[in-house]
Length: 87
Image 1: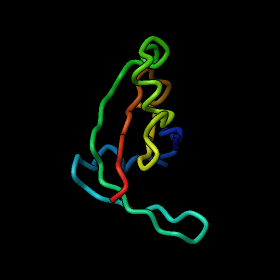
Image 2 (image 1 turned 120 degrees about the vertical axis):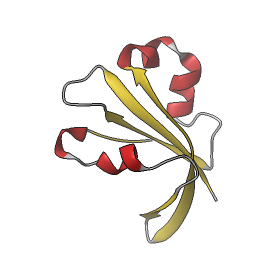
Image 3 (image 1 turned 60 degrees about the vertical axis):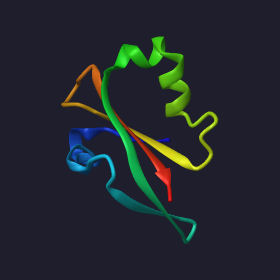
Image 4 (image 1 turned 135 degrees about the horizontal axis):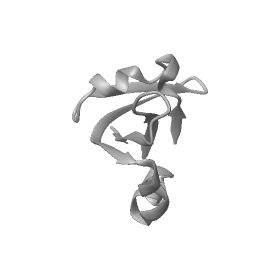
């Protein structure tokens, strides 16, 4: 699970990437390539109320996938969630 505040543009690129696009993360010198499988914008309160979304965000039962979260606008109550599967 990766997250960053969008107020400094750290995750700006997530807004322009679409389902089916790939990206690579290098962790401990090992490259892992992922394909975006889903994007959604939800109210922050939905994460607390929706166990399925919360479990997916924190990768329960998703060993070869990652999830990312960022704010939609400064001080927003909405979040962009991006799910990707390792290929």
